Image (cartoon, rainbow, N blue to C red):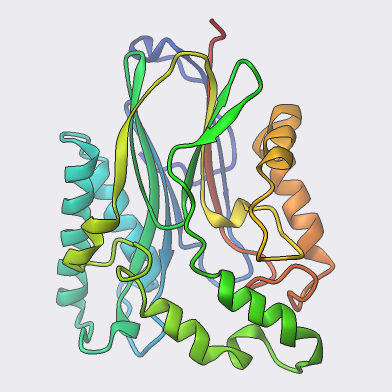
Length: 290
């Protein structure tokens, strides 16, 4: 099923007795459409962040290409009947087929729809995980430590650093001033960074594996809309603050700080980014303490 509400739910499934609670956050950003998707299907949980083409690409069913890509991927994983890596390959092919049937022109890579994803499947005392793009999965432990299941790849760093340099002296938006740079990065998908966009090369960027649940108190899956804004995009993400906010107030505590910092920076100058508010999709799984 798709969670399309920020309300939390308590898990009562006896087969998932280790899970104490499942909490979700799903919020539209500044755009006209929320292209992020939340997924729960049995013991499988995921977040997907769709990206619409930068070119002249058709949309269907009054939905953007990014939303259709995210929905297609989520629907494929919801079948929950194979390894996550194989479901990722199938999701990638399904996105391709949908674009073909929708008349997308593949001769220009700017026209291609895409989505990132972070997914976990609870399997006894382990998890199986899958990640591609900039949707992330974070494990929190009883001893206060934490780790990301896959190292983040910040493909937008150069663009945001350029915007930090020129933004205060510009009169337009980042999209207007750095259109060529943004297009250059987008056309580097599955060359310099990975996304599910129907290209065979996407599978080379799939990251997946298994991890023990020993000592794990929480798993957080989240899209980039929940990233903490940074004044210097060249610095690594402040995961310490992110984790502390979560431990004190859950997903909503992180969301409140993100939106508060963004609220008074509508031109995205103090905290370089692409829009005032980005879409958010996040799932937090809390486990019984050992």
